[in-house]
Image 1 (cartoon, helix red, strand yellow):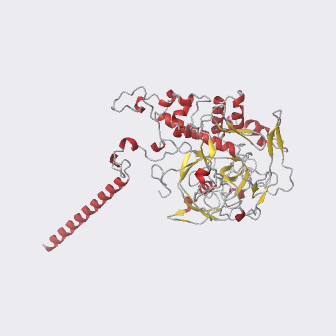
Image 2 (tube, helix red, strand yellow; image 1 turned 90 degrees about the vertical axis):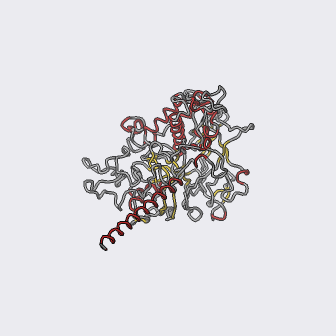
Image 3 (cartoon, one colour; image 1 turned 30 degrees about the vertical axis):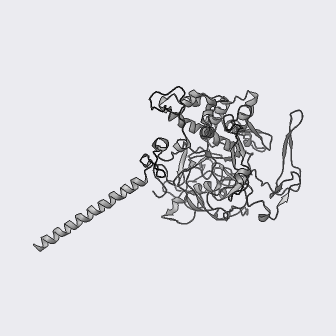
Length: 564
């Protein structure tokens, strides 16, 4: 009898504990549900006002843009290398933290870039004199393949446009051309999203005219001026998007305005751009592949695991994991055993991806990044989202308070050091001007618009700070000053800097490029290595890929992080 009573007490206790546990789980779920609520039941927590109609949104996190993969941010040692055979001393280890972001799965290919060229050619016909420089300024320099002691004419003539090379990384593009492509890509992606959401006409993106192009910044800041203020393109042809009158009638009045997607709706994606140097190196290393809980197991020299350039996996043992120069006169091995499968570049996804799912972060082509080059990464001042190259701009404002929209007659061009002309601001975009004293006065974090020389050109940080005799400006680096001008007849004059006193190529117009290419030895495959080139020059071994900032939390739309 006592045994039965004891058993019953044990069962009752277990049931009671189980019910208690379930109640805790239910409360926890309710708290989580409450904390994740976005609409606050339609009532403001600050004022108690009904804000449901104004602020309610179906936003469910940032979507992954076309071609991108999610990169979970974190801390890493930037610049750690095992060798410094170049003795540059420009990659000393620094501890950095990078926020989550997105990066192109592959390098930008010839086919992707040709889509850009075809668009420019259609919208801004080169045959028209006022547009001729736009298309020509975007075309890659195919002459980068020419070699005085080599027969490379087949590459010069075919590499960009022949279908055999359509999935090969684009080359012959300068840093400036890469940034202009990124801007164009931003506009085309957001234009498609808005059309699919019903904010613009479904075929709006196909009705392209020079004065009626779509620009993301213009749409967000002055939406009525987008598409040249063409109401048919802006309305989307959907009356459900119209703002109805005050009596809440289902029939819109004639003077009702179309509803525009706003920044707070979360529909428009952030800009495609070049990755910063810190982002690129972090993504290339993909240290999550050797992570154990909150620490890294060992060190990495390449984007893949291990300290060697060959695979150690069963079935692929001995395979070279990237295409690069194996030695003098050896770009791919001997006949019948090509080793890496390519003498020059190769098709994207020809080699295994790293732990982040990124292809060709070593080999194929080196890649432009956003940063202005300096020999030292100044982590003592900033170790969060490090980037050198900030030039703060703002929208130009007309006397009547509206933003200044660039027209076909006010296109802004840059004349490069070699005399080529590149369009930097196109019709439909908002004109940008540097921030002035109004924005910089009494600020603690910056005092000028141009911050490329910050802590690297002032008297306090340089022994070699001097005043340039040619330009009268004060610069830290004694680099050449080539000049471009036009004479009275309109003829372009190129004037080389003939000074014998120049000591470096470094200035504010040189940019970092990262990663080893098909033309480099294995040393440059280390993501920590860094080199530089003037931003308006191009080569046959430098390409690029785009990145995009992650807005909001560190997890992607599905909540996936490197911990999953």
